[in-house]
Image 1 (cartoon, one colour):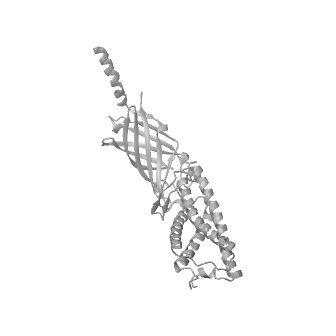
Image 2 (cartoon, each protein chain N blue to C red):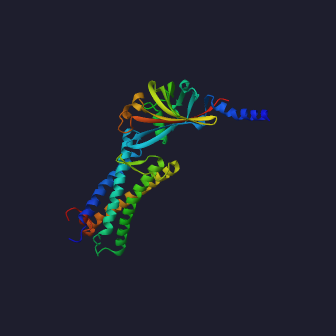
Image 3 (spheres, rainbow over the protein chains, first blue to last red):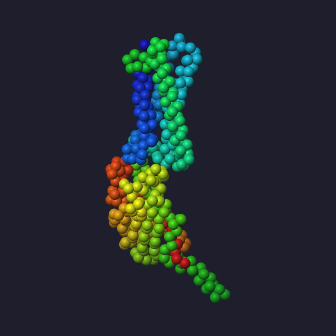
Length: 176
Length: 186
């Protein structure tokens, strides 16, 4: 059973999957809503969850660099192995960049992020409308890119399971 | 020579005579009215870009001071255009029906030093409340600066009705801060 992820890695993977799907859905839904108390509440929740996701990805990266993940099957062509590593690198890069862009956007728009309404996250940028609008674009584009990479990630996992019939998908599942 | 010294002394004394006079020319370009409030634990601030003020204040007779402020509520700057529009609308200020907020001073108490307490009536959206406004006065030659802040409850004035009436998203307490610069009459 060495060819599987640690229970910690699996827990972090699935916890973040749930959290990130929620964050993406809420983010795409809320930004077009007319101003209402509910919209302000959604924005606060989205920001709290975003800070949480950022902290979780730091924990996850810490685990990743201290624990060697199971190797890719030798049957995989070299090019596909590179693509898999590049895909995972993109996922981590975006999981870091997206909350950072959201935090900077909030600062530039003049809405400080206060984690769970209790812990204020310092504003790194001063209020600046042009910069705020630019960072909103950056946040959006990064998220569209993220959705594309997630779709490839899920597509690749299903392809491994259904077509290649290897253990790439099952080794991330809870009871494997 | 004696005459010259006397003339000099008189000339030197003149600015003092002027500064002892009443401060009553409000310089709106050097004055500002801000507000701060909490939104789900996040400190927010804004200001009113347009207001008119009449003020008479003689540091030698502070209890006779008078002040009236008319704030153009549609000039609100919350920091987000979407919110400016919302706040001018019916559930908030309803600026179509109630374009201005007014403060009229009543009794003024000198608290010692440069501190004063101004009682007055604040009218917003057709509702009038008694407020007590602590303020400090700092003279800088022929101009004087009044600084102060006080807290109102938006619920007392029906600011934010309907879906906004609960205070879980936008808090009830609103701090009003002001800095008013006034010159003394020539």
